[in-house]
Image (cartoon, rainbow, N blue to C red):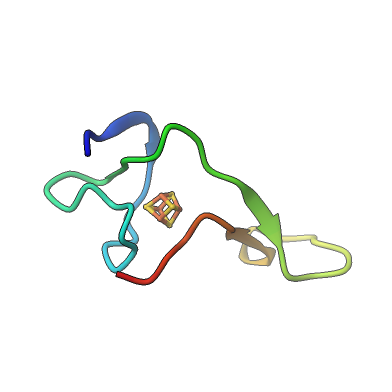
Length: 52
Ligand code: SF4
């Protein structure tokens, strides 16, 4: 899978991470939240994350 230069990511324990470079390999990702009223970046999640 090729690095998608439009999606920077440092989550190397995700199976979609390019590993050798800090990019995602998916064509697109979904960003979501686990909060009812997100007010900070810590409130956001990559919903496309999959544990390697
Ligand atoms: S799916 Fe999300 S967490 Fe996983 S490599 Fe892509 S951007 Fe990072």
